Image (tube, rainbow, N blue to C red; front, side):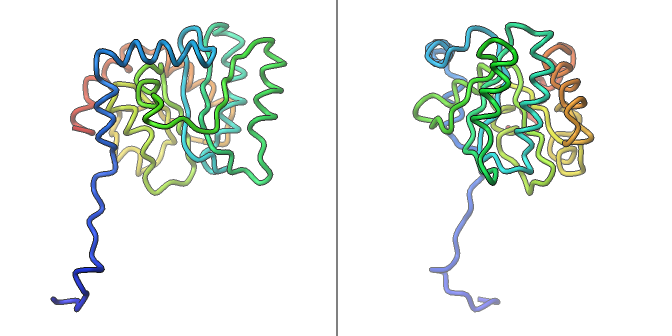
Length: 206
């Protein structure tokens, strides 16, 4: 009444985490993830990025960082499920080039996988989620990952610390490929930190 706005113009924006994420915690999701991984050509551990690949989300830099990491972790793969929003688009060609240089299908690229097609099971099976956005109001993928017990690598800024506290792996310079690579390595190797993040997830995502 105070603002004289018709109730028909008032909408409630619900909590952004999709309730279907809980499906990613079901016992049968591990089997679904195994089938999906096999279909995608993923044989073991993988790190994961998904969403809209705007330049600010640093998917290009993350791919180049993974290229450095892949030389040391020869069985690790990177699943990139992103709509290419670069202008002009570059992800597909970049990934083909990196895979050719590495001599294996180290990076698997899809433009889209829906929740109904098993996205949430794949998230829960990932070793680390990579979402190093240099400018974001509030990115949901790291929260979705945490809901499923998977740590994330994010940009080091006030917002990410407000949301996660210390319960993530942080990159100070999202444009620094070497730093992203080093933090990726930390994110998959530091089991103490990983366990701490998972143990604290309910404080953040409920």
